[in-house]
Structure formats: structure tokens, C-alpha cells
Image (cartoon, rainbow, N blue to C red; front, side, top):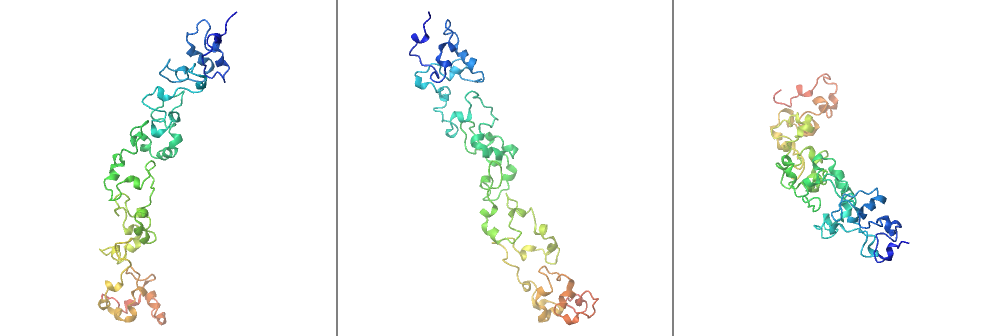
Length: 330
């Protein structure tokens, strides 16, 4: 006749005994004639799918390091030891990484995480990881955030540490990159008009995309000139003036002229030659475009808008001014 283990060990609590039949049978882990031999190894007989890479207490890599087979009481049977009980740099389970619990990043049976393994980060930082994937140089979080993985700081390295060429010519008010750029993906998060509202509101149609003319960091207009888009106008008599387009136009407010000045401000009526002295010929826009050249269709067509009775008068003549002088040089 043999005695049951409980006849001597009736006050010994067993891990999971109320729920797991095998745990309630002492012989599942202990050999009757070698009770203290090596019961830790018995766990692997049933839990073959678990391959823990820690802990330090007990035999490294065995279950009993975290799961006390004989907890102090039956009520404690369902809990594993806390991470902070071994990793004492952590005062509690939520001492690191913004108060995240250890198990939010570390899998209990596969605790170690490679420095470049971002899978643990995905649950909380999925959006940011998606954004940095577009830029190779932003993929390593530790490049901008010091203290990783356990004590991450807000951005500690300035953008200029990598983007020095863009940082050097920056305009006043543009020096804080993250005011305009989303820091992870680099996309523009603020449009120019957020700060330059008046310039945007006063810009003529076609001029409201600031980056077509301005270099976004320095603000200079070296990137484009008026002739880049207005090539035909730049080749006209007025477009070739040394003062350039800004003498009559402004790209946007508040500087420059509000609207093109009157023709007479540069071409006083008293100084105009020939038939310009006739009052009927002093409305410049009837014969000239705003850039100084004759209206489309050449001067003859312009003249016939008023002189309709002269349509058959030398119909092959390209222009009336060949005989009816407007220019003192003719």
C-alpha cells in the first residue's frame, strides 16, 4: 500500500490545480523516488510549443522562472511573476516607454527584441511607421529620438543634422522644419497660405501655388521668373524693359503696384508723335495690347474698327500707318 502525496503535503498550493487536471497530480512533475531531481524539466513534456528565452531566476529558459509551480496560496495560481521582479531597473510594469506595460512590447516567452525589429512598435506607432517607410533615412527611430527603446525622448536631433543643405538658406520664420513638414514622412502639413494669407489672397489666378515661383526654404524667386510662364509677353516691347514686369504688375500683395498704371504715366500724350495727337487716337487700348504691341490682326484691323468706310481703301495694304503716320520715324 502507498500513501498519497497529499497525506504529507496537504498545505502545498499547486499552479493551476483547480483548472488543470495534470497539475493536480503530483506525479505529473515529480518522480516518486526522485522528488527533488529536476521537476522544472517536466513542464516541457506538456508544453512542447513554448520555448522561453528567459528568465534569470531558476534555470534560465525554464518555465518555473516566471511561473511558480507552488505559489504561496491557491489564489495566486494564475499569475506569472512580474517582469519588474527580475528586471529591477523598472520599478513597476509601466515604468518605461511612456507608461506602456512590458507585455505591450515584449512577448513573455520570446522576450528579446532586435533593435531593428519594429513589429512591437506597430500596435501604437503604426501611422508613424507607415510614414517613415517612404523615406529611407527616417526608418531608424533612434536617429531622431534618443533614449530608445525604454526611455524615448521627443525629437532630439534637429532636421539640420541630416538636411544641412536645406537648413542653411532658410528664410526667417521657416527655420523650424516641423512647422511646415510632418516629421516622419516629410510631407507638407501646412500650406504656404497658412502664414502668407494676404499674399495668397492677392495673387492673381495662376499665381496661388507659391512653389511655382518661390524656393520653399529660402523664399527666393530664383527658381522661376515671370518669363518662365509668360514667355510671349516677355518678348514684347514692354516685356523687354529693364524694369521688368514688376513696373506694371505685382505677383501678389502687399508690395508692388496694385494694378497696371495708365499708359500716359510713361507715354505722356503731348510727347506722342503723329496722329497720336488726334483726341480720337488717344485711347491706347483700342490699338495696342497692354504690352505695347499692336492688337492681334495688325494695325489695319485696329484702324477699321473705327474707320469702317475705309475697308476698300487700298485693301492690300498691311497697315494704315504706312501712309497715315503715327510714328515719327516713318
